[in-house]
Image 1 (cartoon, rainbow, N blue to C red):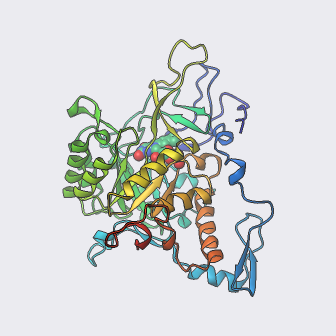
Image 2: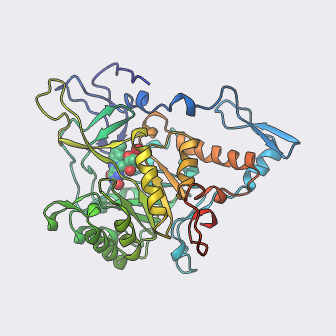
Image 3: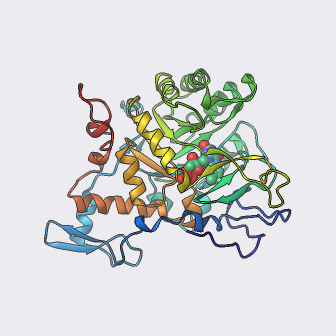
Length: 410
Ligand SMILES: Cc1cc2nc3c(=O)[nH]c(=O)nc-3n(C[C@H](O)[C@H](O)[C@H](O)COP(=O)(O)O)c2cc1C
C-alpha cells in the first residue's frame, strides 16, 4: 500500500465553500493534496471485494448482479426484495414522541463533518439525497479563518488535518444553506463547535427551529477557554456541562461527538448520556504531528493535526465497543470506514450507524454505495432489516436484556 506521489504540489481538488482542504503552499516539498490521500486509504487486499460481481441469491429462484458500479440492474423481483429491506434508523429515539419525531434516517450511512462541506459541493458528483444524513462542516458563532497552512498532510493509512474550523459562522450558514437543505430529503445535521459553553448554546439556539436543520452534532474536541484551553471532550464535567446546556437550549436531536484522545472514554460517554444527549458519535480525529522535510520544525501550520482514515479504525472500534457497553443511547461510529466490512465491524461492536469521512476524498460515491451494499448484504443473509447485525461482537450479557446489543432495536 504505497501512496502515489502527487503530480503537482499545487494541486487543490476540493473546495467546501470558502474552505480548501488541499494546500498550495510551496514552502515545503511535502505539500499533499486530498488526492494524495487516495493511496493511503485504499483498503488492504484482504478486504477488497473478490473479483467479479457480487451475486445475490434470493430464495433460490431470482439471482441478480449487485454492488459493482458496472453491474447490470437487478431484476424487478430482486429490486422489490431489496426495497423491502429496512435500513431506517432513528438516532434520537428518546425524542420520538409525536411532537418531536426523533431523527429518522433512511439508511445508517452518514457523511462525517469536515469531509463533505455543506452537501451542496458534491451535488454534481453524488446523489446526496441517497445518503443517510449529512454532517456539515463545523460551525461556530462567528466566522473563522482557520489555521495557517499547511493544513493537511498524508500519513500511512490516513491523513493529518488542521483546518482549524474554517467556516463563515452560524448566521451565514443558516442564510446560505438553510433554504437549500429545507428542500432536501436527506437530513442535515449541523456540526457545532465553540470555545465556551455560551458559544455552543448560542449557536444551538440560533439553529433551533431553522427549517432544513435536522439535528446538532456537538464537536466538543475544542479548547475550552474558560478552562485554560483544556478540551471539553477530555474532561467529564466539561463534557457534561456543555451537553446539558445545549440540551436546555434546543429541542433539536442532539448528537455529541467523542474524542479518542483520553485514557478512558466511558465516564465521559456516560456523563454525556446523563446530560441529555440523544446519541453519541465516536470518534473524532486522534491528535498527531508531522515533521517538516528539513526536520527543522513541525510540518503543519498549527503544529498539531488530527489523524483520520483507516489507520484509526481499530481505535474507533475499541471505543465504540467500550461505549456500547455503558450507554443505552444510539452510537454512530466514525473512523476509517472505506468498505462494507468496516461498516459491518462497527455495527457488530454496537454502532447503529456509521459516518464516512476521509475516504470520501478519494471516492465521493462511497457513502451511497455502502448503503446499497448493506442492503444487498442483508438480502444475501435473508434479513429484512440490518438490526440483527448490531452488537453481535459485544460480550454476551447474563442479566436482563439490555437496551443495546443484539436485542437493540433502533
Ligand atoms: C479535513 C477534515 C476536516 C474535519 N473537520 C471536522 C469538523 O469540522 N468537525 C468535526 O467534528 N470533525 C471534523 N473532522 C473529523 C471527521 O468528522 C471524522 O470524525 C474523522 O475524520 C474520522 O473519520 P474518518 O477516519 O472516516 O475520516 C474532520 C476531518 C477531516 C479529515
